[in-house]
Image (cartoon, rainbow, N blue to C red; front, side, top):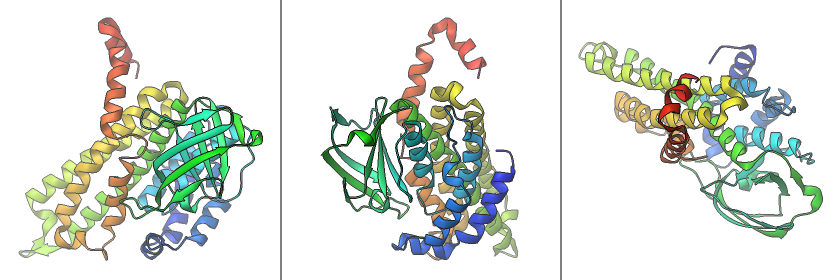
Length: 336
């Protein structure tokens, strides 16, 4: 992803406010108020924009890449997307963090008239959100705190990942027509892939720094060919995930079905391989809570399951390609 003014601004903000101490405190249950206020004041929550398209996607990507690089313990991507969906549907939003539930092949929601019924096993940040934005079909619904039940859970990253129960009449003023849920789900997958690309970069940098600093048998372990080979393999995965995310951001709404699927699939594959390598390079120290490596690898393991695992997106890509037929396959791929 290209270095931009937005990225540089986000990097500085997160370096100052998303320190290891803040991330550890957030995982222990302390809401990072100063970090949230800084993010809101910077205007990052509306980075996706208010227009009918995705004109702000590049700016949102820059912010989320930086957020991933600093393991920001906030529902940043979730709130960005939820605000964008709600504004498109002309719904009045409360201030504060938002949670998001999007209907997909993995999640079925029941809306009959204005009555919404759902049992959702995992909604990131639902217990800390001021409202839950629900996307199904072409409808967007807004449920404020107290209008849904959130039973506290934790993701692998130590962040809220809660079971949600809904069975209520939703006021007409809290229901709008907006983006199709299929598009919202793909966009959510892309935003997660961008966060993962940033976390992958940070994990690799930690491993490279450690390999250059850790001396064994009289020289840095980064001088040993076996370590160099593993770091090269990790760098290859990090670069591939970043390029896939870049390409999807460039494609924007024009080719979201293909590009978002490819980005989330590639980021998920990279997450597993890079996490293995960076922990091996660090040895025992990398498995301790005191070392920061787990802030990134646990988020990678968690994010790869959100908005579709690799198997889900591999099947989606397979369907897209198969639909082109034998004569249409090469033109379809060459156009991307």
